[in-house]
Image (cartoon, one colour):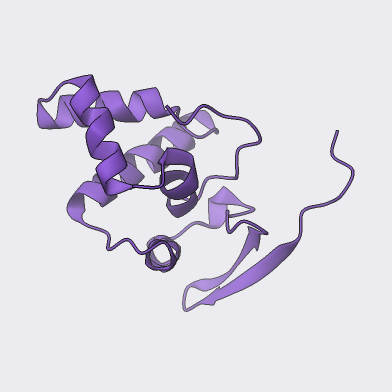
Length: 121
C-alpha cells in the first residue's frame, strides 16, 4: 500500500490542461490528445513518424477496448503482422522507435498511466 500521494503537475496545451504525475505520465488517460503525445515525445527527444503513430494508435485503440494498457507482447505482434516481419524483428523495431523502452516512452507518449510493476520485455 502506498503511503504518499504522487505529486502531480499541469501541462498547458492549446487543447487544454493535462495533469501528469511526478514522472510525466498522464493521470487520466481519457484526456489524452495527439498534441499531448507530440509534447511528451518532444521532451523524450523523439520526432514522431508514421511508424510511431501506428504504435500509438494501436495502443490507444486497445486501451479504448479493454480499459488497460496493452502488454508489450501484443504491440510486438501488431508490428510483426503489420509489416510482415518476425515478432523478434517487431520487438527490435519497437526499441528503435522508443529507445528507452516501451514503458518509459511508448506508454508515456500514448497516454497510459505509469505502471506500478510491469515487464518491459
